[in-house]
Image (cartoon, rainbow, N blue to C red; front, side, top):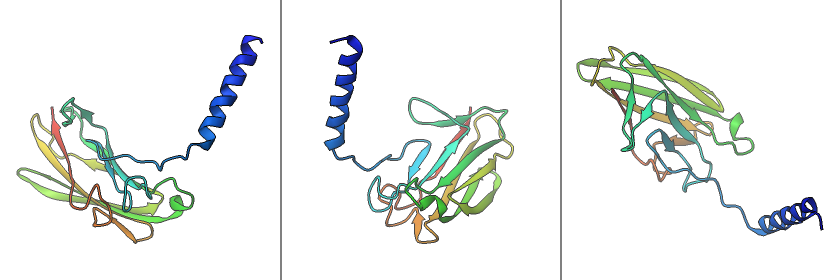
Length: 161
């Protein structure tokens, strides 16, 4: 048997083996840059909130350069069929010592991206970014009692480094 036929036979065996193994639902627990808004259990209607434009230290600390003046946050419906056509609302409030709290919000279908300014970012300044999203046409708030990974507030804390 030639090498290519053997590889083809092995690939076929592997494909058949995986075909009988039931797939588990997608899951992604919280991380320093990600908040899992799955409904009832990880992987069930896996909506999420994510921050970008930050660096993550090995300890999980979020930092931005002193020259950086914003970060981005996205709230996204899951990729489940039909979910990307659902309406969601997203609100973010940024607080930092000796600065007034600033709130940004948006609404959309499937996902909402907010560019969040970091006012007067100076070395060592810390920003607390509280967020709230309502997914599934107003039926699924996160944080909320139906989101096990985020039943209550779980802000992102960003330090200028």
